[in-house]
Amino acid sequence: MARARGAADLSATLELAHWVPVSAAEGPHERFAVWVQGCTLNCPGCCNPELFERGRGRELALAELLEHIHAAMRVHAIEGVTVLGGEPLEQLGGLTALCKGAQEAGLGVIVFTGFTLAEARSRPGFAQLWAHVDTLVAGPFSARELEPTPALGGRRFIGSRNQDLHHRSDRYADPGLWTGPREAELRIDRAGRVSVHGSPELARSLVRELGRDPGLLGPQRSRE
Image (tube, rainbow, N blue to C red):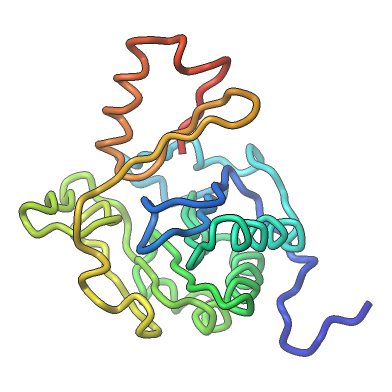
């Protein structure tokens, strides 16, 4: 079947590590959050080193991923989609199709990348992606430049001071959306697997507390 001119490429694929249908810890408002698998930047101190290696995730067609996103819109009234990793810009084709599909559904789009904006612009295909992103959080995580706590003027959702917000649209440009208390969230799926995501410091604290009572963790534990 021919694809409508300008429509997202539903045959595009992404290698994914995780996704959650609704989160308030990965950007302003309630969002569908997806973590891609694979990153060659290998930032020291990264909170997701298990996402560095390609081939350890699940290859998913955009059509199926959009079904999950549309379901989250119906069930949770999500406002947008956040893409993290791993390194999303190392899967530019699938990432662009995902962001375009989310935008076509009326959702806001935030992408986190370890590349600076200048480095991102130099990557072939970035211009096509940029047209479908509202905010790019850009720059490598630096364990030596941790973002201050909110009490000291630090931003929410951001790992280190060197990381910059680049707003292509006004949707998330209000600085107030990036201030306030940090959050971590715990989820238990139907198989009893537990995942924790959000603020790395809070997530580690939560995992430590859970670890004091292993029975709370179920048969498996994963970390996002």
